[in-house]
Amino acid sequence: MENIYLPEQIKILDIKKLSENVKLFRLKKRMDFTPGQFVLAGVWGYGEAPFGPASSPYEKKHIDIVVRDTGGNVTSALHNLKIGDEITLRGPYGNGFPLDFFEGKDIVMATGGCGIPPIASLVKYIIKNRGKFSKVYLLYGARTPNDILMKDEIKDWEKQINIILTIDSPHPEWQGCVGFVTDLVKKIEIDPANAVATMCGPGPMMDALEKVLRPLGISDRRIFVSLERKMQCGVGRCQHCTIGDKYVCLNGPVFNYDEIDKSWD
Ligand SMILES: Cc1cc2nc3c(=O)[nH]c(=O)nc-3n(C[C@H](O)[C@H](O)[C@H](O)COP(=O)(O)OP(=O)(O)OC[C@H]3O[C@@H](n4cnc5c(N)ncnc54)[C@H](O)[C@@H]3O)c2cc1C
Ligand code: FES
Image (cartoon, rainbow, N blue to C red; front, top):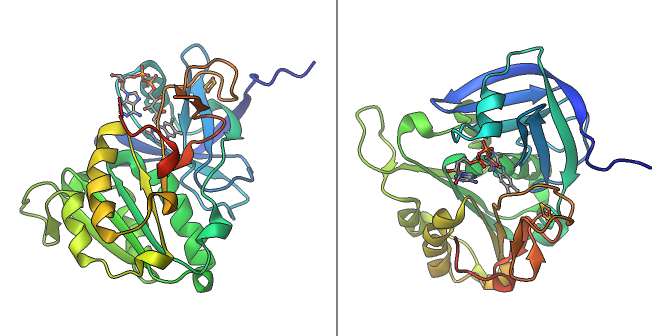
């Protein structure tokens, strides 16, 4: 009988340090996935954890995952690996963003800190299919300029979509917006009746992002939230990731804002 929990061993092609505690791992794996889905990646003996691929879904030679070292078992073990080492990988799992529904609409993507990986994949999809979408905004907040991830890619994306970056407080090396991501809403011009929004990040960040999107007048049904919960099996068997009567791994991680309990933990 097939063991659905048995991961593949995948070689690390490259590792890039994106900030003090965040690394990008380029993995030698061809994977078909939808932006917003997740993989379970790990190290033998240390366990596995969910990560949203950050690479383009059109990329056929590798996938990229971006890992913030939380000091926990899995992310610390991943950060200790070198190019050429192997990681464990299974997936993709979960639903991903409803890309067909997004077509023809204004899109606002709001994220902060290490919520950017699945959004990076979504941005790459949108840019590849730019003609199918109307106005596109990425709002991205970070603590300091050094905490803004994927800076080189962001410069490229700016040629195709509107990007508003902000940092939490003034910094000598920063000429851009200062203030929490919630302040960015004043800079957005969309048609709320024909717009969708995405929010991505851990619970407390969602409260903040809600304050960004709420004044835009986009209905809850058109706001798509990618939730983060602790996971084990990744396939709806262990109940570790439940939120109300839903499994984040199976029914999500992307939910309509009106179908979830908004009391974050
Ligand atoms: C669908 C999904 C996609 C994800 N995508 C990414 C991604 O692309 N990149 C990435 O770096 N992380 C991502 N995460 C979060 C990542 O899975 C966790 O950081 C990881 O599970 C931590 O594992 P650990 O064993 O190192 O730490 P643990 O031992 O599980 O936790 C160590 C410490 O970190 C805290 N912690 C755990 N998870 C989080 C979290 N999500 N946010 C803030 N603090 C946390 C714990 O409370 C604890 O204090 C995603 C999570 C989900 C559910
Ligand atoms: S992680 Fe096991 S049910 Fe979701």
